[in-house]
Length: 223
Image (cartoon, rainbow, N blue to C red; front, side, top):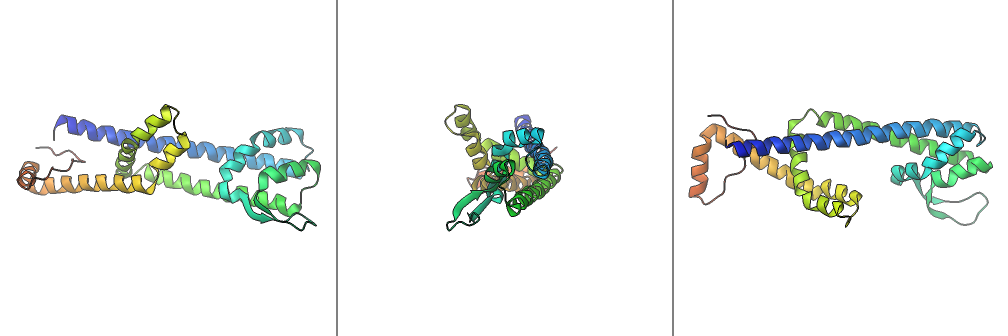
């Protein structure tokens, strides 16, 4: 295998590993923040809004936590007590936390906030566990490296401020990019296996006779 090709494979592998580590660090940090928010939320709710330290902390981080919860923290419809109307897309944290401080929060809504936070903690725990499993799978390193390379034009647009970084991550994690990355890795693996069985030089000559470019080697072959 040419040295340039070997260097390319190693670079893709390291790039994929860096992406996996970065994603795990992001999830662990969000997991830590969510646990901390839960602790302050419980203190705030149990004090009925009189604990000043927990009040300041949850108010400062309320918008961030609500955004992190996503659909978990939103009710399709909420009917206030004694009201004859329904509020659509009701964000439970943003609406309930100020009511706790004023003493007007309904116990059911406080429980709903607690349940939403616990559900999200469970989701984060599962994501972190999945991330740990990915770190011991070399094929995932290659797939992540390929998907990062495919997404380089989008990353460039993000660096220039033309698109949001969230859009970049959504594109890289999209089904299309992940499917394309898997295809590239599989083609490389098949090429490597055939090269081992038949001999890479002979395999390359056969493909050239058929006017087909040989696939890239994922694993180096030593003569």
